[in-house]
Amino acid sequence: MPETFRDNEERQRFELEVDGPIAFVTYRKTPDVITLVHTEVPPELGGRGIGSKLGQATLDAVRAQGRKLAVECDFIRNYMKKSTAYNDLLVEGEVAHAEPAASYKATCFCGAVEVEVSGKPLFAGYCHCADCQAWSAAPINAFSLWKADSVRVTKGESEIGTFRKTEHSDRKFCKRCGGHIMTAHPRMRLIDVYANLLKGYTHEPTLHANYASKMVSVRDGLPKYRDLPANLGGSGEMLPD
Image (cartoon, rainbow, N blue to C red; front, side, top):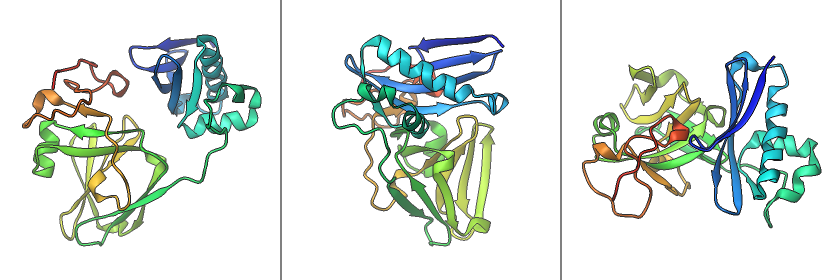
């Protein structure tokens, strides 16, 4: 079972390739700190201890790079509960054990459907693509991308309709009022619960996606990607404000 571990800086993730399939941990880097964001192990690698091997190799790589560690990924947090030898890597004020996850609720326009998310979104920003513009009837969509297992329907599941224009996006709406609720991205295993629907949630955008399709310019100093960041499967090409 050939295994290859690498730091894929272009896609901003640590990768463990096993006979072709790749398990990975996405990250954000500064000169002093690396933040581990999300771990994903393909289904075909499940039950083989690949996640633990990836976790150990990732933390060893952080140590070798001489950076301090911040953790947003639940998988890495759980791994560190069992492997406390890496706790010295944590930045000051960071704890190895996760605090109780915050939760937020969103409803459709009429309230027949209710969705709850927990924890933190993996990515938050603004999308300018033509599909989001047409779907929302607005020039910009404020997105918050959550891990699929952090999103659950708490009310009115039978009232949810799905429209799939492409295999990349399953757009969810209420069949009673037509109100838009969320968009599932099955290939990424992420769900965009529209930020403006989440009660009590503070949107903290970090980027603009698909800025090449913009209808309005937004000069806010955030990174502007022509399509998507590399760690979301895009080119990573940047555009000016």
